[in-house]
Length: 141
Image (cartoon, rainbow, N blue to C red; front, side, top):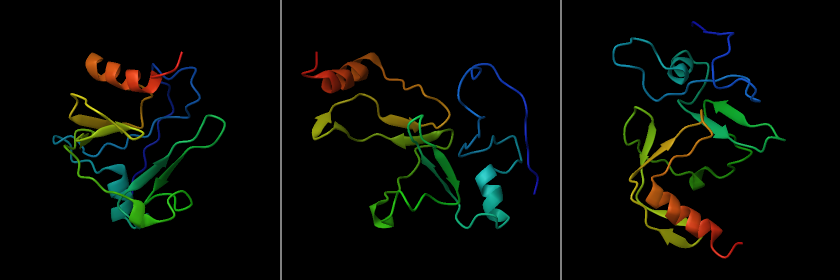
C-alpha cells in the first residue's frame, strides 16, 4: 500500500485551527486510475467496513473521523441509521425531498444537498435563505 503525505500550507487555511485536509471524495476522476483512500484501506484489509463516519464537536472538544465505520459510542443503535443513495458521485450529493425546522415544514426550491466536511460554508439561494432565516429568527429580537 502507498501512503501520501504532504507537508505544506495551502492558501485559505492559514491561521485556522485545522491540522490539515483529508479528501474523502466519493469518486476519482475518470481520467485517473487512482484508488480512493477508503477503498484502498478496505481492499487491503486495513478496515473491515467500506465507509467512514464523521463526528463533529464544538471547538473545545475533539471531532473525529472514523475510518471503516462509525463511532458506536455516538450511534449505539444501528437500526436508527438511515442510508440514502447518492444523487451523483461528483460530490457527496443527495436529493432534497423535504426540509423542516423542528416540526415546521419548509418549502425550498433547492432539490440537491451537498455534504462537505471540508468547508464551513453553507450556500443557499436568496429565497431559500429567507425562508430558513425567517423560521429560525421567528419571534426573536
